[in-house]
Image 1 (cartoon, rainbow, N blue to C red):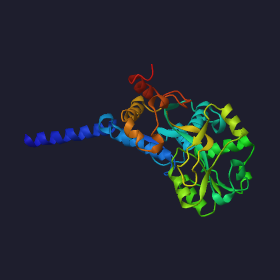
Image 2 (image 1 turned 90 degrees about the vertical axis):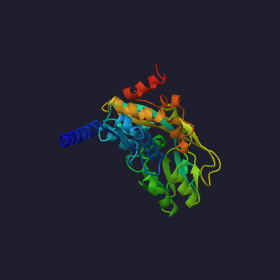
Image 3 (image 1 turned 135 degrees about the vertical axis):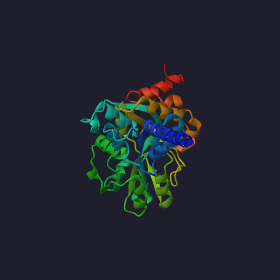
Image 4 (image 1 turned 90 degrees about the horizontal axis):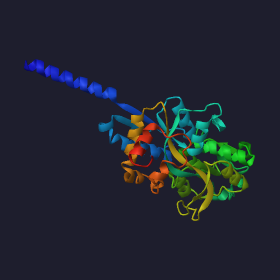
Length: 320
């Protein structure tokens, strides 16, 4: 009888474990290069989500990816449940414009916005580059394919009536590679859509004599005026060696997006993990320090909010 009871107990525990495993939900968040803020965002969100797995059965991972455009494509193809994307590319993906002209994603949903991301140019001091126009006939990293940086660079070039042929070299290096290549004097300048301060740019500024370059002028002013998802931005002085004064440019926001194919409970669990631990989240990177909950649920969100996010925001009284 005792043996039978023992066998029954073991069988019951095994069935219980199988049931728990069957109920587990996995959320993959597409990020960006490992030296960028997108990667930190994804890792930070997953860290908080995985602290609650025992209650929610939601497990989270955030691999390095090609960035905004790659993440949006992966979400559309159901290869990832969530992703970090620039606010302009969220707009284009949902509305079927720009490079998403033939890939409109009606299922795309916003979760929340995160930090502002200035379009950033850093050049070697010996390059003679003091403005964006000075990049003509220079060796420039335009960003790796699929990244928000590469896509934004194309927008800037189009606005100015340029092509990549204006550059002596237009390299496609990842963010984790570009600093060392510039400091080896194989590039004159690097570009990056990123929150500040940033590790790759700090590495470049510390390893070789380099400075931030303003991105301003009539073409940029028109670009901002014509597109609500762009805004003037200023990179504070003193964040990087060689750039003591503020530098003017323009920028977007980083946003967390998902799809209607992702269930409401999973999205709710992610949102709750972040905002129930908001002070902890803000300490995970300097770019998060000034975030405000009310701004994050409305700023730079072109796609409708996911129902799982809406549920949480209503519970907190942030939405009616």
